[in-house]
Amino acid sequence: LFSCSTPSPAHELAEQYDTMFLLNWTYNCSQFAVQPLLRQGMPQQLAMQSAIQMCGCTIDGFRRDISKQQLLMMSSEEKNEFSAGYAEACLNKGMGWTRY
Figure 1 (cartoon, rainbow, N blue to C red):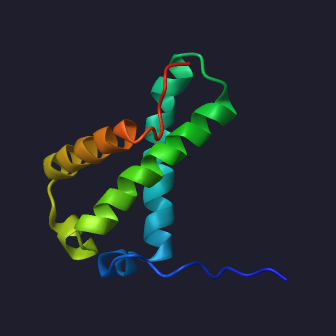
Figure 2: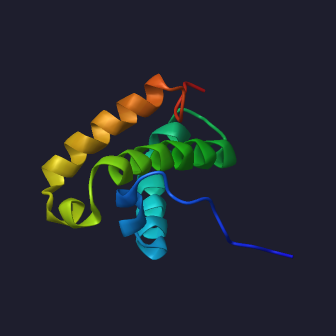
């Protein structure tokens, strides 16, 4: 049997983000994030896996701290600042990019 059930989110803000919103966000982020990895010579599949891991970690930071409504009201500059902070935290945890 196949089940799509997952554990409950750890924080109520995470519940505000619907699945399609998260899938589109992750896809768009990973398409952007994979480019520097490919330029470094990382194989396509490994680069995409690394980009998705980094994007997932970064998005989880947003979901933990910021409601979807707040996110949608942010300027591009604010989103970029928060993204950089969350990405740095992910790198410090050992998630995502490494030099290939």
